[in-house]
Amino acid sequence: MKGDSFYATGRRKTAVARVWLRPGNGKIRVNSIEAGAYFGRETLQMIIKQPLESAGGSSAFDVEAKVEGGGKAAQAGAMRLGMARALILLNPDLKPAMRQGGFLTRDPREKERKKYGQPGARKRFQYSKR
Image (cartoon, rainbow, N blue to C red; front, side):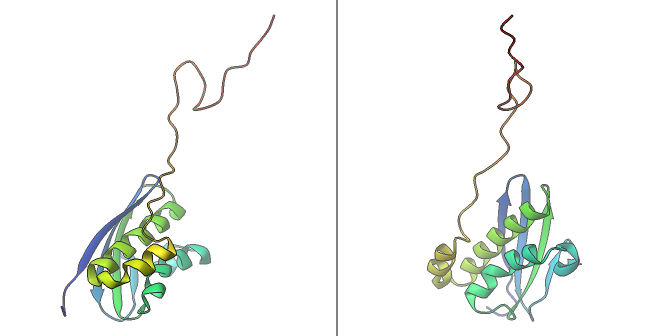
């Protein structure tokens, strides 16, 4: 098991995160940048650390992620899902804890498409009675 790397994919909105988990000392890198520098907001940094903290070993693994598409919040959500899936590949006994934390649920909300004959997805052109 030493030296192995575990790969998983996470998605949210239009963001896609490809996540590799490797034995290490707790470094998290996103697109070859330190996670703290990439995700400036404290809440986004907390989101990506949640699966590791619920697994109990945030310092036992290095996380390398390539994210693309979407905004920073969607990328953090995609990364969280990818990390949870990779942790389950590493240790299947973590699945109930990940499920309980809600880290394995793919958020299905996406942007609704614009429909023809109207200006947006839901908005209608102004109605004039006369």
